Length: 459
Ligand code: GLY
Ligand code: MN
Ligand code: MN
Image (cartoon, rainbow, N blue to C red; front, side, top):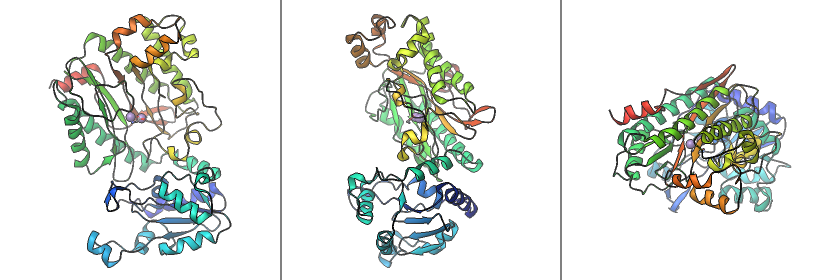
């Protein structure tokens, strides 16, 4: 099990104690998730906050942390002889607890009485149903109310701690990006006309597992890049199409990479693809250059729309005043997602704590197409690590819907757009650290310009 030094957990727990101020905090660690029967399980994934503060990357553990005294109790069981027969020996929990600065170990069976005996317990919103039921039982609360009763104070404290990445976390994020880089470069090398998407996805998995990593999220690898979270890999890759690859590694310490590249199936961009690609690249590079502490990410998201619409106006696809178009939400027609999000142990970092607590603080979320999916709007600060992932997509169903509803007719050349219904979509995504005077792209460079991509694909 990969652990940081005891000191790292000590410092993290100390911060938690200071920020959460008082009360008893209950952190249920994750259990195994069955696929089709109890013993046939999915890959185990620990809860990120549990692992962040208490290190242990194993199922069936709970920690109760007393903010007043700073004392922590681990509830869990040492392996029985039956466990050892089936899954092998494991270090005693007492020994593991020491490595993570946990004071006391008690059997799992003691947890129920312990929780039931408390006047109040603070917890984070659970996202797994077994936890919802267990917590409902121990806390005497309706399962429907468990999420809503989570401690806002605790959520805010943890967002305040985990948003700022330490030097050792940056190192792990960088390592995850470098493994992700090898997955992307291999995908470019292996892509060829006539192959099926799943063949290249297999090559991506091989690169990942060779580095002892897991997926940070399901691979998006598709000639239908206009479908944003497309997890199907069953298309044959045809000459003249683009393929969008959005995949990332989670390193053995639990840190994620999240990178997107888009490239031509046949290894050469045609002139129409070049034109749109250059525009997305400009959106990405210009936005990365705008990042620095003190600017809101919402303003960068809107700047990406401005660059996009300016460029598309030059191509005759839209017309009129660009600022007005941005104001009216035309950007959402071609990029109906947000420009990016925080990244850390979770690919959408801390999303389980509530997107608005992580990305909005006191700001209001817009309901406009595109902006409503912006996960991060707040002012940026030094040592935030975020993604920048603009795209341009031609979604025939969305364009047709807006045309039928006579939306934005003064701005959008609907006739001209019909020629792009078979285009697909382009997204370019990098992981970026906000530093004192700007920003820094994490990891070694991954081919991104047209020349770099064509060179790699035609070696
Ligand atoms: N891979 C999902 C995302 O880019 O947000
Ligand atoms: Mn992504
Ligand atoms: Mn992303």
